[in-house]
Image 1: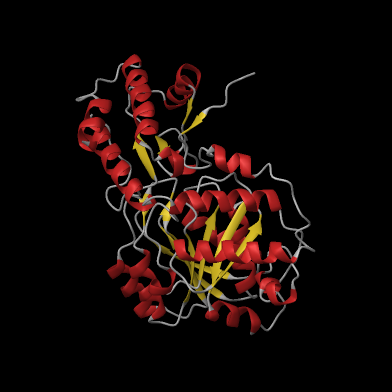
Image 2: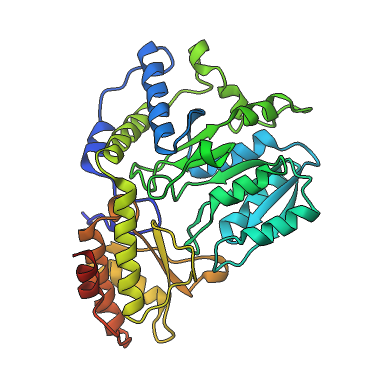
Length: 378
């Protein structure tokens, strides 16, 4: 049987054994068992602690994209003007969901190599601020840019604009303070930093967000993407659909792993050492500033074949990293140091393999990647 690749992608991530074993537990009927409603609610509260919120949290059956679409479906009515803050592929992509549900996306464009400039955003909003809500990406994984969500959301709130934040690739590896930063809907997913299998999205919903949904002039289109149907699930002891109980049990185990250590500090330490090893070794990061602690995007040297590099890492070392798509296809590689990938041995393993395969393709490193990484961590 072919060996499972060691994942150093920008998600999904390696799943620990205790999470995999938990998913094998015998299942109850989640629709009828009152204990499961308490279990689900308690897990939602734990997730709320990770993102520092007292707001309502829900876990939905579907990969992270479900949360993005559900937020837009639940907020958007025909003709609504929605501010789409775009400095990356995923940031721009939010506009597609807005259009699907009849909204009018207006794009604020920022540099794709930098975090959003708050002064530029402020100047934009002084001239045009009639928006129902705004969408923002915290960590845009195609570019590795980490946006200043705190400043962005507080700026938007000065103009009464509700905020929808995609924090799928940052939650758990970066600080996310939903209440302090005034985020109305904050979106996450199971398969990134929390290192559970893909299949679940989770999100926080503020009082303002509930009011927006309840005060719509038209009904929310569809059912599965309708967040409003989740409002009183616990009081009614009624889920809108049967919960994927094994996935939720696994997520609970993964959340327990998160709280067993200072996960955010671990990600920071690993990311700093990884970036230093790359840049001092002669490689160039795509992002010029605002670096994410969960993923690094590396420009492929002119002498190196990006597809061959990834293929050789997989075939010769059983390591899977990410390529890119859109305007970055063939130009960069992406290494996810998130979740269980943000471990010293994981990053050492990928750097050692990367060093070898770059050398095979004729790229001369200025310094040893692995030696620099180890020295930085001392």
